[in-house]
Image (cartoon, rainbow, N blue to C red; front, side):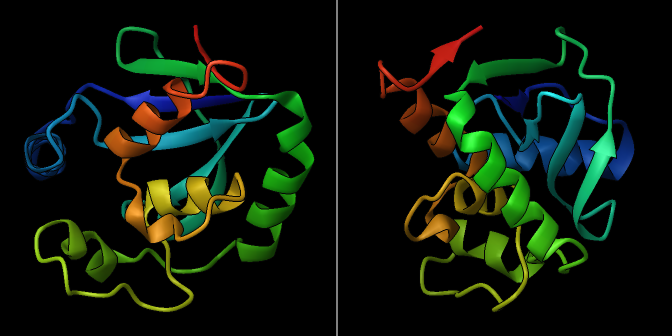
Length: 145
């Protein structure tokens, strides 16, 4: 199983958001996805309305990839199946700007959903850049590909 981290910028307003997330969280990533062994991706996306599965072309010029242990896949897929259709947590993103702001229960932003699906405690604490750093710091569990 692979976690994909978006390093490019969309055009227009979404591109401004990409740049703002990267700047504020001090890293190269603004979004993340789980790439399952069947080729389907899962995440939570504002543009897609929340938690979803999606078939995507993950261009290696726009994404970085970190492999995680395959034994995590069944639990991660189960998490996304249980939460499919949950709304996007736009308010939760603001806690990266204003620490005391809490996210909305039952709503998820991308890295929060991915961290939850991987079994992380307090998944709301993880922006895409923090999640990538944590995954890379576990030498026996993750490798950059």
